[in-house]
Every structure is written in structure tokens, then in C-alpha cells.
Length: 171
Image (cartoon, rainbow, N blue to C red; front, top):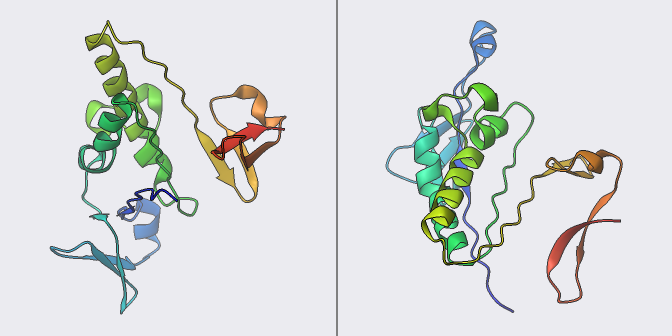
């Protein structure tokens, strides 16, 4: 079986204003000059990439996503999977907040990747590109394609196709 390289990054968001007002405490700390975090007093976890509370959208994109986009342009598949509880910062990292009013430095990884992909396509007019994109939300046990308005009415299921590839399909 072919080995599939998977990299795991963790991004720690700062406390929200309402959390500060309620005297909530930071429970995750980055160990300086390492790819490790401490949760609580002594639970240490190691990741491929660690971004502290002062990290920028640019840092996250350039470190984790840009290499995937460059591989994508060369013809490889790429997947970005954002995981975390509600309020942990996934939407901000992925989308950058409210898409219509995002300032350049706060653009999320989707906007940055789209710009880079289509810039590269425009620079190579003699190459035929076929771009397929999915933006799937997994909530509890339900799957929803956020780019497809009709999926709230359809069931999406993860299965293997006839070639053995894992796909998300309407049933």
C-alpha cells in the first residue's frame, strides 16, 4: 500500500474578549523553539507545525498550505482538514472571518489558495487545467458540501469508488 504523507498543525488562538471578561485562563502553551504544546500543567503533545496565539494568517498559509498548492499545480491532489470544537478558530483560519470585508492580512487559507491557483493558471495559458474543489463540513455524523446549495437536502456519504479511491458522494 502506498504511504500517504500527512502533516498535522495546531494553531492556538488568543482568548476572545468575552473570555477575558469572564476571567478565563489560557490552558494551552507553546514550548518555545519546539513543535510542542502543553495542555494544562503537564500534558505535552508534538505536531509537525505549531502556531502560537500571535501567529498570522500569512505564517499559517506559507508554512502549511502554500507547499500543498504548489504540489496541486504540479498535478497532485491536496486536502486540508480543519478540526476543532466550536469556537476554536477554524472558520477564521480557513476563511478569515467575513469574506466580503476581510483585509489583506486576515485573508484565510481558502482565499489565498484560490488566488494563488488561478494566478498560476493564468501564467500558463498553454496548459489545460481541470480544477475540482470540495468544501465539506462534518458536523456530528452529517456531511455537507458548503459549495453546493442542494446538499442540505441530500445525503453525502464517504465510500470507495470502483478504483479504490475514497470519495464523498451523494446517495
